[in-house]
Length: 313
Image 1 (tube, rainbow, N blue to C red):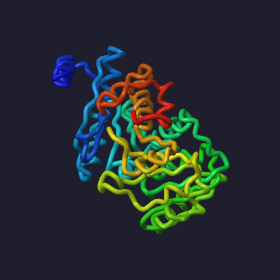
Image 2: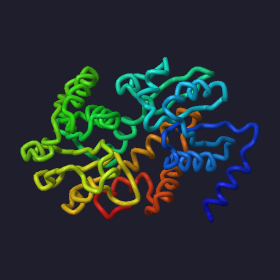
Image 3: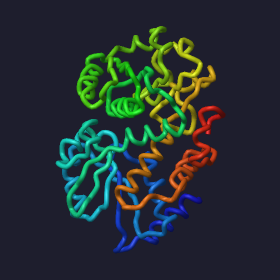
Image 4: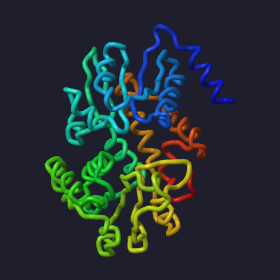
């Protein structure tokens, strides 16, 4: 009932002068971005709204061309559009070029600029959590766009070695070759999922990321020897939800430090909001809106850093 009243109020305030931001995805109905962005617009009291458009892959080029024509201030790109958008948008930021993916298309006077806030959002969260991986080893499970963002974030935090563990090793090898030029001294190694039962490798890892959909598409995660990890090894799932993911549950049972992708999503949202609107969102408004939608305990940015040590929030 509260959601319906809020939706009715949002519709009532939309008029001819309302500026629009949006997200393109397929599917897109599950997106939490409208909840976060509209909460920030309401808090600021500005005449803007954020909507979700279900855009099929074959329609992406036409949808991107429509952004300047419709005066849309900016668009987030989600699955499966990020890589294709990087090929369609001519002006790309360094980050979008490095990751070969775009998650933000910004309208600058009728010219589209493609950016990617994935790695920045993750890096900001890792720093807030006090994760120290300078000179250490990291494991990234997966070899897609999410994995590339995790690798870039780890490299910026000074990781000495990153092992890409992927079901298809050749795909991990291609990702390692593509990113190696941008990572400086960080060494990239591609392996199959057998890396997740390599006790020596696991014992050396300071952080392990899940950058795959495993846990959403199946109840159990791939075989991983959690007990071989250090007691202070950090487990980070780029997925998020109301309950701990299949990747995180064994780590939580062993009292390892952990986090899911909720704060990364919030950080991405805040960065995109500023790119689209030229103003930062009010502190903790987007965070509170997302946590309410997920039925989690409310937190602030200052208390979020402690979530990995306590109960699920």
